[in-house]
Image (cartoon, rainbow, N blue to C red; front, side):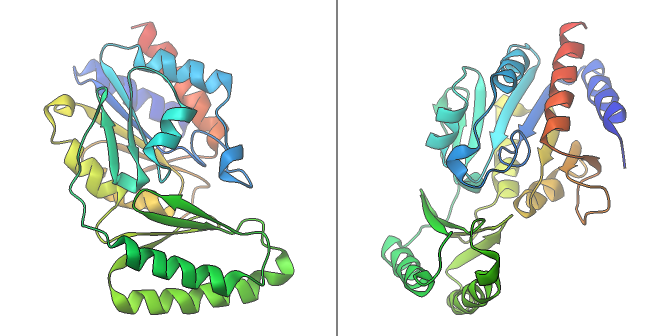
Length: 263
């Protein structure tokens, strides 16, 4: 596995070979630390400044890839020149315009039925919340009291098994979050689609992500670019390199911006 300096060297060498860079950046746990509640994970002014420096480069594009909705991402990172893949690849905003992606149709009434069943079963517990998404919903349970976690997870597991039998939706597990989406939606599938667009042809992709939902992107990009897992070395992953935490990611991006500006 590569350390920070090797990652930076690899990125610069790719640029020197004449290929522009495409930075693909997860948000929660990668650009910012994971917070107890989604609304508390705000970007710092320094992160916004670094991203602004990066998107100002003529031969670099930056694209934030997240489970958050497109609207949420655009409010958090309101800067011209930044592209987005929201809702795990269900929504795309590329070069200043909404871009339609290939996704399976979703039955809203059936989705609401499963959401209502889950909410009813979780009523005895505290510390959880349901976040509505454009193509599904997410269950956050980071603040469930420790003494309730075992029973809470057992109820979720039984609900998941019933949902799996229907084979109409997919379940994505993250860090104390469970997301329900239409079949086929994934970061990897969306990235594969957008990399075929004329906008990104010839770019050298560098993907940074911290969670299980990023593995589909790591798999797609293994032979095409640089894949970086944000976390501790030794974690099972399809990524080729590691950075330890979001602070190291921000340092990497800052150093990358400085290097590009000086070339």
